[in-house]
Image (cartoon, rainbow over all chains, first blue to last red; front, side, top):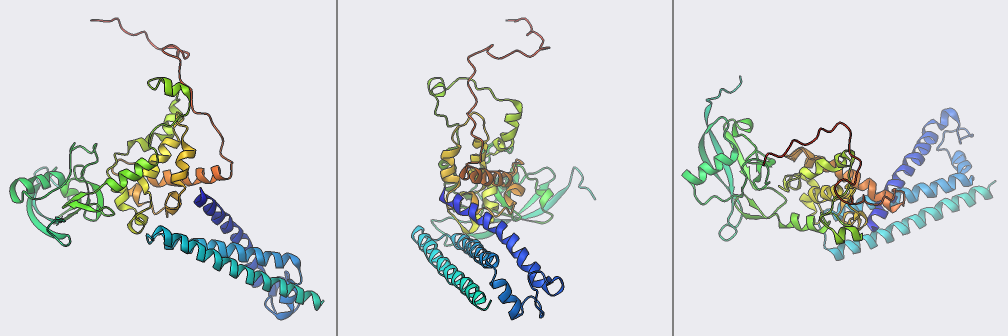
Length: 125
Length: 277
């Protein structure tokens, strides 16, 4: 049943990505017109608007959530592709471990960056 | 222009030959046959064996699409040789090969043991834990026509292996359970007499179980009996997830009838005619 657990979370991560990526696209591509979460001039990707969003805990949390969901979804998909190559059982376990460590490392790095940006934006007021 | 009843035409059979004791790899041998309308591929193979090459090997039994023995690759499609008329699929040339995704015993004979072992692993039979079944396995269980309809189409599977040969996942992942065993698992999971779903989940929800299916749907296209294994696998996935999330309704398996006359008789059933012997 372990695979069922992995698959269920893979599906859940997909739904979460759909929602969070939708929000990301909405802000990034309509920010210049609607000024949704982009109150400063220069479009959604300008430094001021980026710092504005980084200062909001909601955005920091959604960044971390999106990162986690995308990493899990992508790495599980990669694992599935690799498993279809009829690997030896020991190699399958090794692949799972490597992807787990890789995913955890990238998630830690990304989460640290998001919270550091939040702290910097907070310090600048 | 439709073929007349008396169509006679030469068709070249390009047959894959392989004898593992003698040949390094399979090769193709061509036989020219005079084909009449209505001749099946199986008839053509019999003609070759009787008149052209007695060493050709293939597997067959019933000749009527019931036993599932003569599954082979005809013009690139896995299907039954007894169920396929030559002129329906070939004008001048017909390629005949063994089912892919299986090792070859000889010529057109695939080794189906891998499929049958996977089939056995999912416990393809009614599993119950109750005393009623253990003490009286010949008893009768109540099952409504609607409950029967839920799994009936999956019982038509004849284990010919055509779905396994058509599966693109199985082509790369030999440990993948495949459409036939997974559809069989779903057939028993849907049976209201059965109580073994959670035991089967261990196998169907394994690393090379139902979740490896890409839903290409080739298994359902290939099935000569009209079974839809792709649908069965998608329903199996949903049930596995619901079981994991503890959202599946827990139902007791249907109960055994006490004996003849136990149920309520339907009205308007005419009396049986008097015995004549």
